[in-house]
Every structure is written in C-alpha cells, then in structure tokens.
Amino acid sequence: MSTIGTPSQPSVTVAAGKPAVETTSWWAIKWKEIKARKHSYILMSPYMLLFAVFTVLPVIMSVIISFTYFNMLEFPRFIGWQNYSRLFLEDDVFLVAIKNTILFAVITGPLSYMACFVFAWIINDLRPKLRAFMTLIFYAPSISGNVYFLWQMIFSGDRYGIANGFLIKMGVLLDPIQWLKTEQYIMPIIILVQLWLSLGTGFLAFIAGLQTVDKTLYEAGAVDGIKNRWQELWYITLPSMKPQLMFGAVIQITSSLAIADVSIYLAGFPSVNYAAETIVTHLIDFGTIRFEMGYASAIATVLFTLMVGTNLVVQRLLRRVGE
Amino acid sequence: MRLALPIRKRRVNRSFSGTFWMFVLLAAVAAFMALPLVYAINAAFKPLDEIFLFPPTLFVRHPTTSNFIDLMTLLGQSWVPFSRYIFNTFFITGMGVVGHVLLASAAAYPLAKHKFPGSKIIFTVVVLSLMFTPQVTAIPNYMVMSWIGLIDTYWAVIVPAFAFSLGLYLMKQFMEQIPDALLESAKIDGANEYRIFWQIVMPNVKPAWLTLVILLFQMLWGTDGNGFIYSEQLKTLHYASNQIIFGGIARAGVGSAVALILMSVPIALFVFSQSRIIETMTTSGMKD
Image (cartoon, rainbow over all chains, first blue to last red; front, top):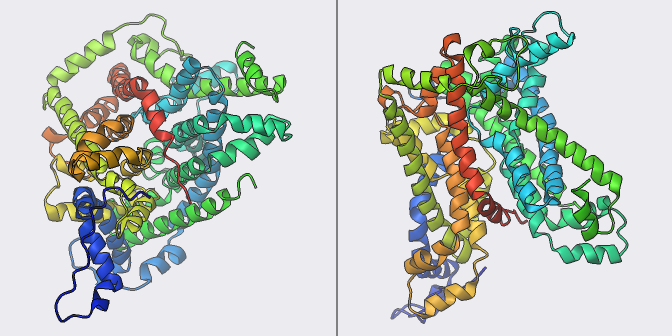
C-alpha cells in the first residue's frame, strides 16, 4: 500500500486542561486518519452509497425476511426457522432443485473452469493474429446475448430441428424426438448449452494471466530439470498465475451455481416434471409467482451460503497448486 | 503442422505428438463453439423455403435479404414506433455505461492507492459480492426500488448498474499498477486529490475503461428490464426482439435476422477492443 497523498499531519494539539493521553487513544488516531483521508471518502461515496443500497442492504434484508412470513401485502410476521425446516423437510421440489443445481455445478463448474484454462493455455502458444481470432471464437458465445433462441432451433421437437433432422437423415432416428420435453434429455442439453456459454470473464482472465508469466522462469526451469510441458505447467505456469486462478474460480463457481436462464428458456418454466428445476428457478417461482417472499428469501439465503462456502473451500484448495 | 514450428523453436521441452493432439482438441472445440454462431448467420439469410427444408442445412444455398426487408416492414407496423425501442436501449446502455465507469473509477482510486480506515473491509465486501448473482437479492431489490420510486422508469435498470461490483474490482486491480512516483510528483506540483484522479489516474487507465464499457454494455444491451419496467414505451430492443422471435412460424426468418443484429453489436465491440480488455485482465488476479 502506498502512502502518497497523505497531507502533512498537523502536530497533535492538546486542548487546554485535557490530558495528552486521550488524544492518542485508538479512536482518536482513527478519527484523525479519517479526517486526513476525507477526500478518499468523498471520491468513494457515490459508488459506495449505491452499492450499499442495491447490494449490501438487499442481502441483509433477504436474510432477515427469510425468518418471516411475508406476502408483500401484510407486514412480515416473524416465524423463526419455519421457512428453512419447510424447505428441507417438506418441499420435495426443492430437493430436486438442490440435486439438479449440485449436479449442474459439479459438472459444469470444474469442466468449464478447466476448459477455460486449457484453451487459454493452448491459445497462448499461437501467433498473435490466430490467438486473437481463437479468443474471439471462444469468448463470443458468452457475449452474444440472444443465444437461447439458436439452441431452441437446434433442439426443436419437429423434424426441422437441426438435431432431429440430422439424426433422421443419418438413419439414427426414425421419428423426431421432443428433446426439451423429455425428462432424460433435458439435463444433458442444459449442461451442454451452459458449457458453451461459460467461457467468459474467467477465460479472458486466464488468457491475460498466461501473458504475464515471466518467460525467464521457463528457461530457468529447463536448467533445473523440468522435462516436459506437464511439469512446466504444474511447477511454473500454474503457480505464476495463482491470482488469476482464484479470480476465475470465483466467477465460474458463482455462474455454475446460479443456472436459471438456460433452464427457463430451453426447458420451459416450470420444466417437465421439474426435470430442470434449479435453486434459482425455485426462487423465481416462489418470489415472482406465488409471492411467498419469506420462503423465497430463505431459498436465496441458502444459495448465498452455498456460494460463499464453495468459494472458500475451492480457494483453500487452489492455494496448494504447484506444491 | 505449420503452427507447431515456432513453438518448438522457442521452447525445447515439447513433444511433437503432444502439440499435435492439443491442436486437434482446440480445433474440434472451436468448431463446436462456432457452430451455433455460423448457423445464426446463415439462418438470417435463408429464404422461407430453406428454413423449413428437410433435412435442415447449416449453410444457406440461395442467400436473400428478404428477412431484413420483412423486419423493416414489420417494424413499421408496430404499436410503439420501433425507433423508440432503439432509443430506450441506447439510453439505458449509454447512461449505465458512462455512470458506472465514472463512479467505479472514482471509488477504485482511493481503494487502490490510499490507506484509510475501513478500506480493507470495504474491499472485502466488494470481493464477497462477486460471489453472488442478482437473483439472490431480486426480491429486496424490488422493494428498495419501489420505496425510492424507481419502478417503471429507465432508472430501475440504470442506477443499480452504476454499482456493478465486478467493474470496481477490475478497475481497482488495474489502478494498483500505476507508479506511486507519478502521483507523488503531481502532489508536489500542488495538485489536489480530485485533480490527480481526473488528470493523472484516469488517462492512465484507458484500457480498464474499455473493459468496463464492454462488460456493462454487454449486460445492459441484453437486458429486457423484466420485472422493473412495465410501460410499453419504455421497453428495450431485447424485449421487442423477443416478441418478434417468439411471434410464430411466419416470422421465423425475421427472428433470425433480429437475433443476428442483436448479437453482432456486442461481438463487434469486443473485436475492436480485445487487446485493451486482455491488458486489463492481466491485473484481475485475486491475492490471498
């Protein structure tokens, strides 16, 4: 941390009759620092005010509301842990949602995280023009917006759908399959589309991180007896970009636990026999359709805990990379 | 293997077959990634008889611009003039992007370069907020907005975008690499904090601006204001396009045209700013 910009500290003025000890108390020191730094606070205040109102306050409210019965019309009524016990003990659909979410997260999270890294790693070895082109190919899906529409056309239930048409022509199928209305196909399709979409910010961070790795380390490594590219990867590349790995993990975990849009657009809402229900679609169901705000907030709180918990565990694991 | 040559020259410890299989993998996955996009481009130029051709084709045989012409005709008949949707989207996107870049930069500068009581806690909360999605706070967010009276205005989408936490995070990480000596010399020359921020720091973080612009643009461009905006006159291009896309078989071709137009804007923006964005991302890392 730098110390520039610190205005010259005025010498401690001791008010008449007061002991000098008081001015050096912890609070007095802090207060002086705060006054000396008032411009920092002024610069930060507009952003922080909005951040507090639209991010911090809603999280706190969500946790508080989760302990109440609240239907948006009457004043919330405190009911303790009832929402949570109902969630875990009585709500069968929520258990399906948890199962689906964890399945999505366990498959798409690590897979897309590794895909982000592996493809960034391969692309990094390409020549600049080709590297820029490949980066675009891999990153474009995550920024192209209206993409669900494309996948709906591909997995359309009639013979004009690309997947059906192709398989019928190949002779694999005789009749078109209702891909998005058949329980057993819904999950794999959503996982596929989610993977397609997931090479986003984390991927860019990895590409960038690889470019910052000190090239002389590789030469030094070769002298020290590193034999092949896998050893090079584990002992030099990965440890050098630990900060990016951490950042990528946060982004990837969060997006893989929050799958909802893909499910809603492809499988419908609600999906056939709740086959594609996730924690977030369950939350949307109770929050915007049934108006059980206390219950929906309990779902949100569970999701938030799950995300922060997973992040902490994964970050602890990542610290061991290259050891 | 044309590609393999320069690599083998640069580093000794590589095997040829390893390089070969890695590029096969890269090519295969790249094809999968590109397939839907290639399909989208082709579908937009297909005449009606090709859209419902069996077996379906990936590439267009007799390209036509009739889908785009139909789109124009269709737009001329809509209840709210189409230019209104365009204006709404540009207004929301423009205001949101400019406001976010300014506010997030102003907040990032003290966090990156000054030490003051509370700075660590504030940054920890920002990092923590990267770990949840908007859905977690959707309900209280709605309540807060209705208290402030933002529901059914553009600002319900714009104002929360100002406080997007990923942008602040990336900007702060990028600002940390500005040399302290530069700021100190400005200080000695008598510049106050605001001048240093505006005349020294801001011009030095141009790549980070562009990154924030892209991230926010992408987020706001795709928004349909769902749940916050109800008036038809205030709705966005994305919303209007959904109406066209899901409007039935007769409009299948038009839908493809709309999808292509909508997705090409953020992609084009990324193409022009790619190197700057990567430069920003080099500093994105999270230290313990």
